[in-house]
Amino acid sequence: MLISTLIAGFVLSCVLFMTIGARGNWDFILAFRGGKLLTMMTIAIAIGQSTIIFQTLSGNRILTPSIMGFDALYLMIQSVLVLTIGSLAYASMGSFLKFAAETLVMTGAALILFRVVLRDASDISRMILTGLILGVMFRSLTSMVNRIIDPNEFSIIQQVSFAQFNAMNEDLTLVAMVITLACTLWLWSRHRELDVIALGRDYAINLGIDHDRSTRQLLIVVALLVSVSTALVGPIVFFGLLVSAVTYQIAGTWRHAVLIPVAALLSAIILIFSQTIFERVLNLSASVSVVIEGLGGLVFLYLILKRRRT
Image (cartoon, rainbow, N blue to C red; front, side, top):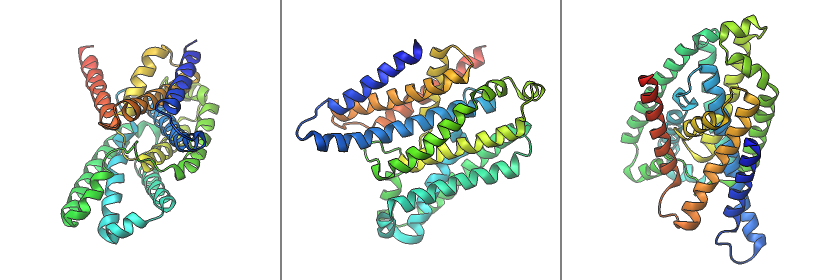
């Protein structure tokens, strides 16, 4: 019943996004809005699933993959590119080349972190702390680079510092969709294994799961999903936390056969419906990413205060 309701809500949000304020040739409207809709769906599914899986592996529902410093690394990549090749060359870079480079760098950095720090799955707390430290280092390096570059070129860095849902590159949607779909199918095939991993390392090993190997594989998939979504629209910190908090609240189960599709559908509904309101009703008078991140930050504070009281 829950998943059926979410599917209905997802279809309704898609219909509203495609039809509200639609005037003129429907061939153009379907092509223009349809591409943007597919991009938002891809981003939403990647963020929702990666957050649920990361929280399962870490055993903590107030953490998100962004804690590993992906957003800070993304901003440092942009700043270094503008510094080394200049704003004109940066602006003229092919979108596919830029997307591929950013995804490969962020995924490669995650693999190095997992290889060096995560000797076994019991070290995941150390990996999270290392990710926090690396995030601080990346932000410091980004700040230093921003002081060096020309002030006129700094405006480019400011534009990519926030998720740009109003200026998504639809040419990259197909590549991102293929990667996200492959990761989704692989995660779905492991949903029973995720249920066992959620019990804890000792229980999983006793039940016959190669916990260390599975954890590394799942972390790689999480890193790939986060890298794709970040390279596509920019850094998103608290959106996944907002989705996961609501998912656990309404799902009422620990089974990943329910959590994964609920998180994906709920994430898509929130993003598409919010973009419809801000784009069609408010005429882009505000940024949907700022509002979503603000709500996610409030959810983060609520979860921390709630845990402290208990």
